[in-house]
Image (cartoon, rainbow over all chains, first blue to last red; front, side):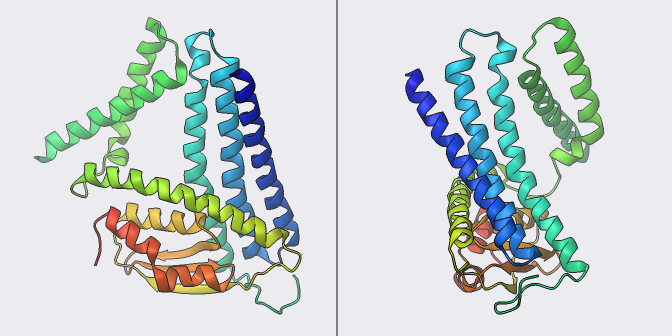
Length: 115
Length: 169
Protein backbone atom coordinates (compact mmCIF):
# COMPACT_ATOMS: atom_id res chain seq x y z
CA UNK A 1 0.00 0.00 0.00
CA UNK A 2 2.67 2.49 1.06
CA UNK A 3 4.80 1.57 -1.96
CA UNK A 4 1.87 2.22 -4.28
CA UNK A 5 1.28 5.64 -2.70
CA UNK A 6 4.96 6.50 -3.04
CA UNK A 7 4.83 5.60 -6.75
CA UNK A 8 1.73 7.79 -7.28
CA UNK A 9 3.34 10.65 -5.34
CA UNK A 10 6.47 10.37 -7.47
CA UNK A 11 4.41 10.50 -10.66
CA UNK A 12 2.51 13.56 -9.41
CA UNK A 13 5.72 15.36 -8.43
CA UNK A 14 7.36 14.49 -11.75
CA UNK A 15 4.33 15.74 -13.70
CA UNK A 16 4.31 18.95 -11.64
CA UNK A 17 8.00 19.53 -12.30
CA UNK A 18 7.45 18.82 -16.02
CA UNK A 19 4.75 21.48 -16.28
CA UNK A 20 6.78 24.02 -14.29
CA UNK A 21 9.73 23.29 -16.58
CA UNK A 22 7.69 23.76 -19.75
CA UNK A 23 6.43 27.03 -18.26
CA UNK A 24 10.04 28.15 -17.79
CA UNK A 25 10.96 27.08 -21.33
CA UNK A 26 7.95 29.01 -22.59
CA UNK A 27 9.12 32.08 -20.70
CA UNK A 28 12.40 31.88 -22.62
CA UNK A 29 11.14 30.82 -26.05
CA UNK A 30 7.94 32.82 -26.61
CA UNK A 31 8.32 36.14 -28.41
CA UNK A 32 6.65 38.81 -26.26
CA UNK A 33 5.27 39.84 -22.90
CA UNK A 34 1.70 38.62 -23.45
CA UNK A 35 2.53 35.19 -24.85
CA UNK A 36 5.08 34.64 -22.07
CA UNK A 37 2.32 35.27 -19.56
CA UNK A 38 0.36 32.47 -21.23
CA UNK A 39 3.18 30.05 -20.42
CA UNK A 40 3.81 31.16 -16.84
CA UNK A 41 0.19 31.81 -15.86
CA UNK A 42 -1.15 28.43 -16.93
CA UNK A 43 1.71 26.00 -16.42
CA UNK A 44 2.44 27.31 -12.93
CA UNK A 45 -1.13 26.75 -11.80
CA UNK A 46 -1.28 23.07 -12.69
CA UNK A 47 2.38 22.43 -11.84
CA UNK A 48 2.06 23.82 -8.32
CA UNK A 49 -1.24 22.06 -7.72
CA UNK A 50 0.16 18.69 -8.83
CA UNK A 51 3.18 19.09 -6.56
CA UNK A 52 1.06 20.12 -3.57
CA UNK A 53 -1.37 17.27 -4.22
CA UNK A 54 1.54 14.84 -4.24
CA UNK A 55 2.78 16.21 -0.91
CA UNK A 56 -0.76 15.92 0.46
CA UNK A 57 -1.02 12.22 -0.44
CA UNK A 58 2.42 11.53 0.98
CA UNK A 59 1.51 13.27 4.22
CA UNK A 60 -1.78 11.42 4.66
CA UNK A 61 -0.59 7.89 3.86
CA UNK A 62 3.11 7.80 4.66
CA UNK A 63 4.08 10.58 7.03
CA UNK A 64 1.28 11.33 9.45
CA UNK A 65 -0.45 8.07 10.58
CA UNK A 66 -0.22 7.92 14.36
CA UNK A 67 0.83 11.54 14.68
CA UNK A 68 -0.99 14.10 16.82
CA UNK A 69 -4.03 16.00 15.52
CA UNK A 70 -2.26 19.23 14.60
CA UNK A 71 0.13 17.25 12.38
CA UNK A 72 -2.70 15.25 10.82
CA UNK A 73 -4.44 18.50 9.87
CA UNK A 74 -1.58 19.63 7.60
CA UNK A 75 -3.33 18.20 4.46
CA UNK A 76 -6.22 20.59 5.16
CA UNK A 77 -3.79 23.50 4.94
CA UNK A 78 -2.42 22.09 1.69
CA UNK A 79 -5.99 21.87 0.34
CA UNK A 80 -6.53 25.53 1.23
CA UNK A 81 -3.28 26.33 -0.58
CA UNK A 82 -4.58 24.61 -3.73
CA UNK A 83 -7.78 26.66 -3.52
CA UNK A 84 -5.92 29.92 -3.07
CA UNK A 85 -3.55 29.16 -5.94
CA UNK A 86 -6.52 28.51 -8.25
CA UNK A 87 -8.01 31.81 -7.15
CA UNK A 88 -4.90 34.00 -7.02
CA UNK A 89 -2.93 32.75 -10.03
CA UNK A 90 -5.37 33.71 -12.82
CA UNK A 91 -6.20 36.95 -11.02
CA UNK A 92 -2.54 37.95 -10.79
CA UNK A 93 -1.94 36.94 -14.43
CA UNK A 94 -4.89 39.05 -15.48
CA UNK A 95 -3.68 42.02 -13.38
CA UNK A 96 -0.21 41.93 -14.96
CA UNK A 97 -1.79 41.60 -18.42
CA UNK A 98 -4.09 44.55 -17.83
CA UNK A 99 -1.26 46.71 -16.48
CA UNK A 100 0.86 45.94 -19.55
CA UNK A 101 -2.04 46.61 -21.94
CA UNK A 102 -2.96 49.90 -20.29
CA UNK A 103 0.64 51.17 -20.35
CA UNK A 104 0.83 50.42 -24.07
CA UNK A 105 3.00 47.32 -24.41
CA UNK A 106 2.51 46.30 -28.06
CA UNK A 107 1.39 42.69 -28.66
CA UNK A 108 3.53 40.59 -30.98
CA UNK A 109 1.93 39.61 -34.29
CA UNK A 110 2.83 36.62 -36.43
CA UNK A 111 5.76 37.52 -38.66
CA UNK A 112 7.17 40.23 -36.40
CA UNK A 113 10.75 39.89 -35.24
CA UNK A 114 11.30 38.67 -31.70
CA UNK A 115 11.37 41.38 -29.04
CA UNK B 1 -35.94 38.97 5.64
CA UNK B 2 -35.67 42.35 7.42
CA UNK B 3 -32.47 44.31 7.23
CA UNK B 4 -31.40 43.62 10.81
CA UNK B 5 -31.97 39.86 10.81
CA UNK B 6 -30.08 39.64 7.50
CA UNK B 7 -27.12 41.31 9.19
CA UNK B 8 -27.24 38.94 12.16
CA UNK B 9 -27.43 36.01 9.74
CA UNK B 10 -24.37 37.34 7.89
CA UNK B 11 -22.41 37.73 11.13
CA UNK B 12 -23.40 34.23 12.28
CA UNK B 13 -22.36 32.59 8.99
CA UNK B 14 -19.06 34.50 8.92
CA UNK B 15 -18.38 33.61 12.55
CA UNK B 16 -18.97 29.89 11.94
CA UNK B 17 -16.80 29.90 8.81
CA UNK B 18 -13.97 31.77 10.55
CA UNK B 19 -14.07 29.54 13.62
CA UNK B 20 -14.07 26.37 11.53
CA UNK B 21 -11.12 27.79 9.60
CA UNK B 22 -9.35 28.50 12.90
CA UNK B 23 -9.91 24.98 14.25
CA UNK B 24 -8.71 23.35 11.02
CA UNK B 25 -5.58 25.48 10.88
CA UNK B 26 -4.61 25.22 14.56
CA UNK B 27 -5.59 21.63 15.45
CA UNK B 28 -5.10 22.45 19.16
CA UNK B 29 -8.22 21.85 21.19
CA UNK B 30 -7.19 23.18 24.64
CA UNK B 31 -9.09 26.06 26.28
CA UNK B 32 -6.51 28.76 25.49
CA UNK B 33 -6.39 28.14 21.74
CA UNK B 34 -10.13 27.58 21.32
CA UNK B 35 -10.91 30.67 23.43
CA UNK B 36 -8.53 32.84 21.42
CA UNK B 37 -10.15 31.43 18.27
CA UNK B 38 -13.65 32.31 19.47
CA UNK B 39 -12.65 35.91 20.26
CA UNK B 40 -10.77 36.42 16.99
CA UNK B 41 -13.57 34.89 14.89
CA UNK B 42 -16.09 37.15 16.60
CA UNK B 43 -14.02 40.29 15.92
CA UNK B 44 -13.51 39.31 12.27
CA UNK B 45 -17.20 38.46 11.86
CA UNK B 46 -18.31 41.80 13.35
CA UNK B 47 -15.95 43.84 11.16
CA UNK B 48 -16.08 42.05 7.83
CA UNK B 49 -19.29 39.99 7.65
CA UNK B 50 -20.46 42.01 4.64
CA UNK B 51 -17.50 40.74 2.59
CA UNK B 52 -18.37 37.06 2.86
CA UNK B 53 -22.18 37.20 2.85
CA UNK B 54 -23.23 39.90 0.41
CA UNK B 55 -26.84 40.99 0.40
CA UNK B 56 -27.33 40.59 -3.35
CA UNK B 57 -28.80 37.70 -5.26
CA UNK B 58 -31.39 34.97 -4.83
CA UNK B 59 -31.24 31.18 -4.86
CA UNK B 60 -27.70 31.25 -3.50
CA UNK B 61 -27.71 27.55 -2.61
CA UNK B 62 -28.70 26.50 -6.13
CA UNK B 63 -26.02 28.75 -7.57
CA UNK B 64 -23.40 27.39 -5.16
CA UNK B 65 -24.33 23.82 -6.14
CA UNK B 66 -24.16 24.56 -9.89
CA UNK B 67 -20.89 26.41 -9.35
CA UNK B 68 -19.48 23.33 -7.65
CA UNK B 69 -20.36 21.20 -10.71
CA UNK B 70 -18.94 23.85 -13.02
CA UNK B 71 -15.63 23.70 -11.09
CA UNK B 72 -15.02 20.10 -12.23
CA UNK B 73 -15.49 21.04 -15.86
CA UNK B 74 -13.15 23.98 -15.28
CA UNK B 75 -10.54 21.69 -13.71
CA UNK B 76 -10.56 19.55 -16.86
CA UNK B 77 -10.15 22.70 -18.97
CA UNK B 78 -7.11 23.68 -16.89
CA UNK B 79 -5.45 20.33 -17.60
CA UNK B 80 -6.19 20.74 -21.33
CA UNK B 81 -4.79 24.29 -21.14
CA UNK B 82 -1.52 23.03 -19.73
CA UNK B 83 -1.09 20.41 -22.44
CA UNK B 84 -1.96 23.06 -25.02
CA UNK B 85 0.66 25.52 -23.75
CA UNK B 86 3.23 22.76 -23.30
CA UNK B 87 2.64 21.63 -26.90
CA UNK B 88 2.98 25.16 -28.28
CA UNK B 89 6.10 25.88 -26.23
CA UNK B 90 7.96 22.65 -26.96
CA UNK B 91 6.98 22.43 -30.67
CA UNK B 92 10.06 23.34 -32.73
CA UNK B 93 8.11 25.84 -34.88
CA UNK B 94 6.01 27.29 -32.02
CA UNK B 95 2.52 27.37 -33.62
CA UNK B 96 1.38 30.71 -32.20
CA UNK B 97 -0.51 33.58 -33.83
CA UNK B 98 -1.63 36.00 -31.09
CA UNK B 99 -4.82 38.03 -31.53
CA UNK B 100 -6.80 40.34 -29.25
CA UNK B 101 -10.56 39.87 -29.36
CA UNK B 102 -13.56 41.57 -27.78
CA UNK B 103 -17.01 40.22 -27.04
CA UNK B 104 -20.02 41.07 -24.91
CA UNK B 105 -21.84 38.84 -22.44
CA UNK B 106 -25.19 39.10 -20.65
CA UNK B 107 -23.40 38.72 -17.28
CA UNK B 108 -23.65 41.61 -14.81
CA UNK B 109 -23.03 40.41 -11.23
CA UNK B 110 -19.49 40.73 -9.84
CA UNK B 111 -19.13 37.08 -8.99
CA UNK B 112 -20.22 35.89 -12.43
CA UNK B 113 -17.84 38.33 -14.14
CA UNK B 114 -14.92 37.29 -11.93
CA UNK B 115 -15.69 33.61 -12.55
CA UNK B 116 -15.76 34.05 -16.32
CA UNK B 117 -12.63 36.23 -16.31
CA UNK B 118 -10.65 33.72 -14.25
CA UNK B 119 -12.02 30.79 -16.27
CA UNK B 120 -10.90 32.44 -19.50
CA UNK B 121 -7.44 32.96 -18.06
CA UNK B 122 -7.19 29.33 -16.96
CA UNK B 123 -8.54 27.70 -20.14
CA UNK B 124 -6.44 26.87 -23.20
CA UNK B 125 -4.80 29.76 -25.00
CA UNK B 126 -6.68 32.77 -23.66
CA UNK B 127 -6.10 35.44 -20.99
CA UNK B 128 -8.51 38.19 -19.97
CA UNK B 129 -7.11 41.70 -20.42
CA UNK B 130 -10.04 43.92 -19.50
CA UNK B 131 -13.59 43.58 -18.20
CA UNK B 132 -16.21 46.31 -18.46
CA UNK B 133 -18.81 45.41 -15.82
CA UNK B 134 -21.41 47.91 -17.10
CA UNK B 135 -21.73 46.24 -20.52
CA UNK B 136 -20.39 42.79 -19.59
CA UNK B 137 -17.70 43.40 -22.21
CA UNK B 138 -14.54 41.29 -22.24
CA UNK B 139 -11.21 41.98 -23.92
CA UNK B 140 -9.17 38.80 -24.33
CA UNK B 141 -5.67 37.99 -25.55
CA UNK B 142 -5.60 34.68 -27.42
CA UNK B 143 -2.39 32.87 -28.32
CA UNK B 144 -3.82 31.57 -31.63
CA UNK B 145 -6.97 31.79 -33.74
CA UNK B 146 -8.53 28.50 -32.56
CA UNK B 147 -8.87 29.41 -28.85
CA UNK B 148 -10.18 32.84 -29.87
CA UNK B 149 -12.91 31.20 -31.98
CA UNK B 150 -13.88 29.03 -29.02
CA UNK B 151 -14.86 32.23 -27.19
CA UNK B 152 -16.36 34.29 -30.02
CA UNK B 153 -18.02 31.56 -32.11
CA UNK B 154 -18.78 28.53 -29.90
CA UNK B 155 -19.35 30.47 -26.65
CA UNK B 156 -19.41 27.24 -24.61
CA UNK B 157 -17.89 28.87 -21.57
CA UNK B 158 -20.08 31.98 -21.59
CA UNK B 159 -23.26 29.91 -21.73
CA UNK B 160 -22.03 27.61 -18.97
CA UNK B 161 -21.23 30.53 -16.63
CA UNK B 162 -24.47 32.28 -17.54
CA UNK B 163 -26.37 29.09 -16.71
CA UNK B 164 -24.62 28.73 -13.34
CA UNK B 165 -25.55 32.27 -12.28
CA UNK B 166 -28.90 32.34 -14.10
CA UNK B 167 -28.02 35.49 -16.04
CA UNK B 168 -28.83 34.44 -19.57
CA UNK B 169 -29.76 37.80 -21.04
